[in-house]
Image (cartoon, rainbow, N blue to C red; front, side, top):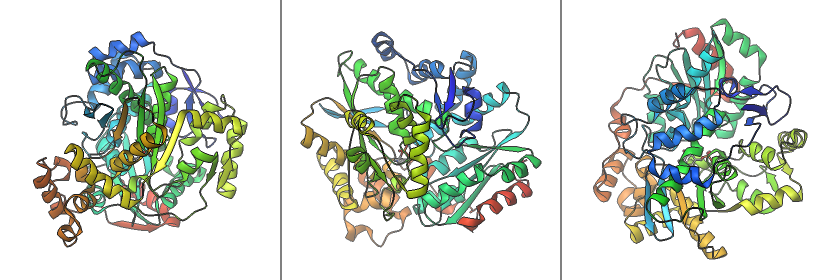
Length: 503
Ligand SMILES: *Cc1c(COP(=O)(O)O)cnc(C)c1O
């Protein structure tokens, strides 16, 4: 299997090469050149397997240049009982006859990013060996909160890698910030940027595209790579849990083989839901992929109209990991739906860069509307959703999952579709405890408390333990204090290399 760039100006590479580079040098994203298909027999056989073996089947079909033994090493290094606090890794919780929730937050940082970022460093180390790479890999990450910590945890002290994470100074929760600035490890850097997530992400993209920066890094023995969701090595492990959820439903007798399901995905950068698209393309019986957005509802508008327009005010919401106006992974979907038409994708991306807007042709729009459905939740609706789900199911969800559950209800009401639906739960409620406790216990009982008091209140209220990654965060030493302007991100990387923290 080879991987080609969505912009069409780079030679196809085996997966090890694509994973090592992260982003294609022509500015595009790597996608598989061929389709992978699973038969219904393959899918039902997964019902009898554990998460690790399900992962092996899916990953082997895409990463064909990895041996079974290499993949097993990656899988066992990532999805083990030390890193994940649930034996199913991604457990499926049935709430009622038509609704299940797929919990993707049992990893070390309590958010779904762990599903990919626990395994990506293992893929990278293997890929470096396979491509005969002498240089070390320097990972640069732009994060709206969850990716940063998950990447730091995944890469800390992994030999021949180093990582610098940039986060928007005002764009992350206090718990998210403390998780990052207290990060331990010899090869890690964390930098706050004065700006929002899109500023931070475009700053990182510029560094990746700057030959001078590449030259500087190489002087210190490093080549850049990306752990953002544009790296194929992050996307492919996410395909696994769509199959795994379906296999669990078969195993429980909640579905007949071949019966379609819907997935609702709280969406930001379009990485998670794109993995669902690939799962469907591979033969998983998926009826609709439901894209749940918050007030930054660019994607809802796009799915409804075929017009992608980022020219609007950026809003800070209580589901900050979805506060995104440029969803990078959408480019992969467009490439797939146009039958790998790189010139067309290039034009749309040029329009986006120049005018902040593009409009797809009606054929592409119709295909999108057949596969996807979308709506969004305001902050107010998100809080109501948390309370309502607790009242109805005694089930506590975080703000992002609450957006998903709100949109799930909207979908049922407006379409009458009766297929079993799986809502992807993308974070532990403890990670966004300030909003969750406000929704459950009321403004009056919570507004004078700090996030750490609220963690305990949530534990008491829900009878769930505070996850280990969030305990005693406020008492750990702060190890990373650098704050820079958007235009000084390059210097921050050079300072990191010069300090030799990474060696
Ligand atoms: C990253 C994230 C999302 C958005 O996922 P994308 O793949 O960027 O669409 C949603 N919820 C949480 C909690 C996240 O961390």
